[in-house]
Length: 261
Image 1: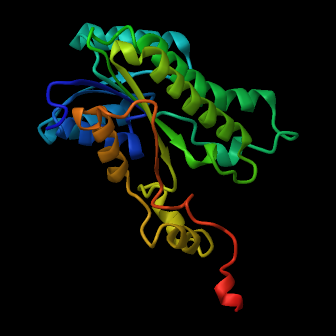
Image 2: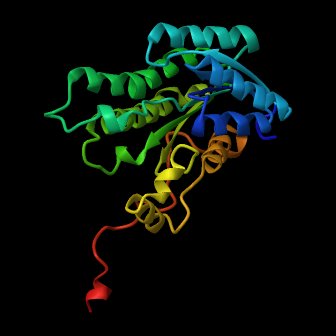
Image 3: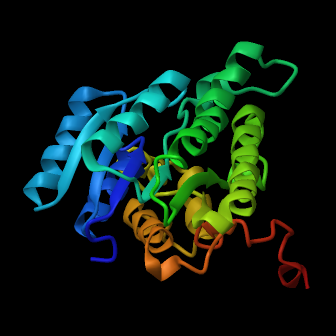
């Protein structure tokens, strides 16, 4: 129960990795504000947490809209008082349909990724820091290996994630003396209900398994890492960027020269 009686905000908590985060943090004793756009899915997550003995409430918010983010933190503090932890998990998931090489990209679609992946994090810091108590609190921001290694046609998404990573580091420097910790989890391929079918793809599946030693990380692996960074166990980390990809970005794509010998 590493987060017992702590108030935790999780954005993008209505499915996938965000749901796993909300469920696990509640199991660690936190009061969880599960944030998302879908009321139906959000209420289902809260019901699942309650059935497992946890404490959670759903708050609807589109994190790409500033006044909704401001209202979110007002609502959480009204219900629970000072906030202890904020997990910035929400982000655009429509990379395949709306991201393109820069010459082909529209300004509208570029801004879509920046608003959901960068502005949302900026507003989370802007309104979340004042909502924390005098002892400070912890932010954990989900990033992507797209911020450090590039795949074709993902410039908008990658730019937003890289900028959010830099912003988190800056918050750690600017507010660390106030007890604020801001860390980043940079995620590779994570196995969820939505991504699992990709492992059956004849091209993607073998490539992911080869890059991750046969088993990509799960959503629960991510949730456990978030709990560590958010709790006293991770109190020594501030301004850190932990890569959770089971070695995917550590692997070189240079051919094995031994095979040529």
